[in-house]
Image (cartoon, rainbow, N blue to C red; front, top):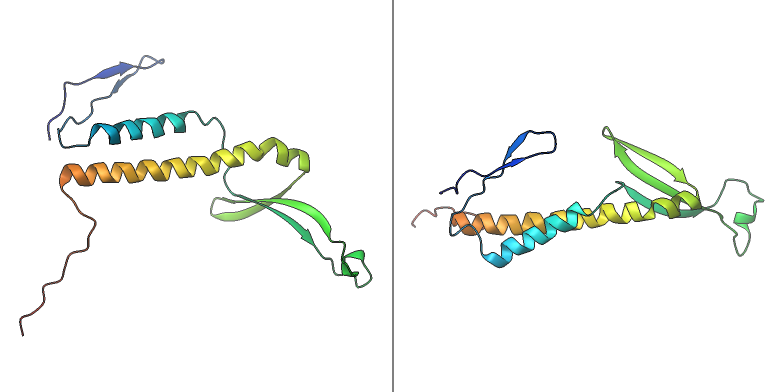
Length: 146
């Protein structure tokens, strides 16, 4: 694989970053590269993202004479639960309706970020496979002659 001339970029903190990219003619086609650049640009536009999942629940309590046991039941809630992993442990936090409204765009950003990253990974895998002549097909085992 050949490389283009070394390209460097001076960062704001005056450090130098090497931005040399492979220029192998079979690396990728132009449209695939444009798609990857577009995805990278979309990813860069996301300013805040909260990980985890949101669930809105209405529940029944354990009191036998409570309204939640009536016919029809009047359940308690809604309770807005945000669940995520912190240091390998599941953590859940209850959110108020105001917090839910405030942070909903951040949860949507995290979801969109995961989608964009999956697309970028797939395009990059296709480009690498194309450039190297790799396939994702499993090798066939040698069958003994009978």
